[in-house]
Amino acid sequence: MEALSVNEVNSYIKKLFIGDMILSNISVEGEISNFKKHHSGHMYFSLKDDLSRIKCVMFKGKDDGVGDLMEEGKNIIAQGYISVYEKGGDYQLYVNKVEFEGLGDLHMKFQRLKEQLALEGLFSQEFKKTLPRYPKKIGIVTSPTGAALKDILSILKRRNKSIDVIIYPSLVQGKEAASNLVEGLKYLNSRKDIDLIIIGRGGGSMEELFSFNDEKLARAIFKSKIPVISAVGHEIDFTISDFVADIRAATPSEAAELCVESIDNMLLDLDLLENKLLNTFSSYFESKKSNLNILSRDLLYNNPKNKLGEEKNKLYRLEQHLIDRLNKLILNKKEGLLSLDNRLKLSNPLNSFDKGYSIITNLKGEKITTVDDLIRLREFTVIMKDGRVGVKAETISLEE
Amino acid sequence: MAKKKLTYEEAYMELEKIVESLENNDFTLDESVKIFKRGMELSTYCSEMLEKKEGEVKVLINGEEEDFKIGE
Image: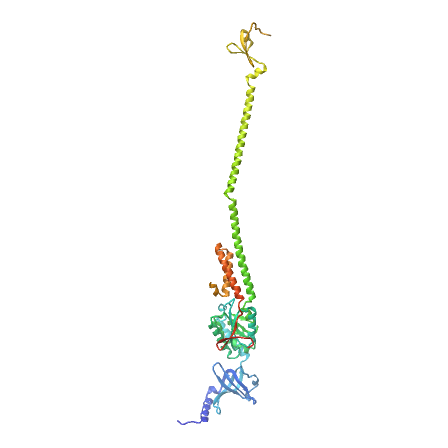
């Protein structure tokens, strides 16, 4: 095979490029890298994405006022043609026109992704995990030099100095940032000792914060088994990571406050709980004691000895009662007897004798009670109170 | 006792449960004394955890954990 010269080869390649319909009129999207503006006004740079880069040149004439806006890291859409620089043996994109990913574009991107992910359910409340109340170790994915980290750390230390922190340093803007952040999440999830993750950065423009709207990042946050707090920018900044995360913190400082209970509060809670324990137990104890006291009192009260005393009393009273009644009875009988005695005495026939009466009987002992009977007798007996007298009468006659 | 491996959260929650159950008064005297002792143990354990050492702040550099000083 005949050997060609270098120039011949390069020319050939150039012709191929020129003849290609796609390469001769093409729009390329990418991030500006290695940007150099020469004194002449021509701009040399690369456009890159996650995997590769392409050399670009934009001549002053094509500038169109865009030159001032061109800078490292910006995302643009460059329109032009790809051709070969024969002398150098490389190909590059000759840029005719540059469109910056305008705010309008960014907004649209944001909206579209937001709607899509919302539909898929990534923002749904049911998937949001609750934060652990007392995390021991917190993982932070953020820029190691940013102010956000300083704020987070100072608040964490102030609230609870015993918390451990592990920082996964990451870019937080630019095309590489999203994959850094995803790596950080994956790494922290691979460990067994992380209780909570904060992912975020300080304030910035929409373009600067835009990495936090990345779809891969959103999905990585969603998949995270460890709870994630998203803390991006300021209060008014909302990014997709804020929606997917388990909690959104308006600022990095707020994130630190959200994730760690102040140790003072914890000490207070613990103290109150301990008090409650002591009080509950002691009142439980007191109630048992008082129950016991009541039973003990009841027992004493119902002491059989008491009953005995009572019964003795009863018995004594009954006894008294009995004696009493007996006495009364005796008294009654005595009185009865006395009265009978009196009556007897009163009706004692011998009472008449005291009065001077005497009884006259015949010799047979029969009582003579009339004068008629008496005058027929010559002998009779007169019984008086102190004896009897035999009378022989010489004469007896009636007295008128 | 297994309590050596309890996290603060676990210990605290167990303590809360103990206090609640004592309030409900479900125990015999012996049981309640036991439970109370356990409660005081847990409370002391938690206090100690709160007083413990200063937490570490580390940053991951090339796969290795290194001490992090603010301003690096």
